[in-house]
Image 1 (cartoon, rainbow, N blue to C red):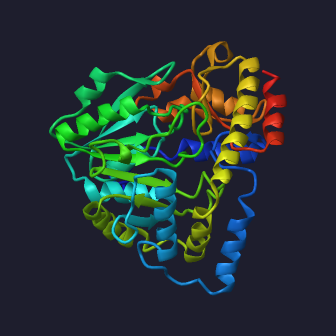
Image 2: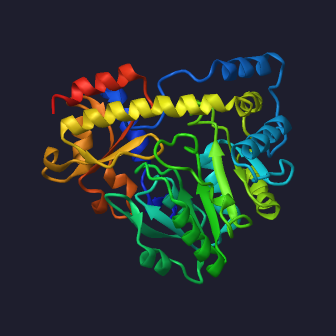
Length: 385
């Protein structure tokens, strides 16, 4: 019998991040692998979702997003970033999470033979997304310890085949927040080579010691940026799978067509709750960032005492560590699988964040969107190292 695996599917593996969560459940460990909160979302969102269901908001919303939700996204964007005006009728597409937003965008904008520039270490979906879209990922390394861009390397990655560059800021897994100067360099290259900037900003409000600059607000990128976001991280509802894209009308039109045939639309009652989320006051975001800072500092102290090396993240909710003497073999995949059993803490091996897994040897990522008591439980176990 023939091998029914497509050539595209044969080029990548199943998510290591989600695999580590399954191993954690099986071993009864503390899950610091997958980036989902173990605490409640705002009560206002739960009330709004239940109210929408009770009011029979249970059928299809308009394919590219319920009007109240799109209006809310546009209003929140303008309030958060003065001067950035979004037309909810022509520049927004609501999707089933940021994951669908990224693949829908790539399917809508790239063709076979195109190249997509991807920074590594990367969130593991980006490479497979490019492949599934028929494009070739072109990897550019962010250099430790500060995860800086080598300008010459980035310039060399752009060519006549380059169609898009994927930017993730704040960045998973490093916690890097791209500076305005770095985004200006990306803008220059996008203009020179007529390239799109696809930017994943799902951690936009989880920042500590840096300023988040949306690439769409950088001169030269206004008309060539697709901004991808979701309710998941900011509002602690990763299971709701409600995201969106913001892009110029012509690009949005293409994304809407692809989205329509991928998923038709996101859950209608959860979009109603999303409109409530968009109306939360600025104090909510400040309090959330402060709470994440406390979690970050707690986990960083634990990891330092356990013997891991790292740069304290400026944003997002991950710490990417060097294992050093804790893993003399520098086999982070095997080390993460031992760690989830004994002492029973799940993390993600650095091998899953690089095109060449060997480049992630000696690296491991911990996530801290957890209750303080969860982090303290992890601390007790990690102390055994």
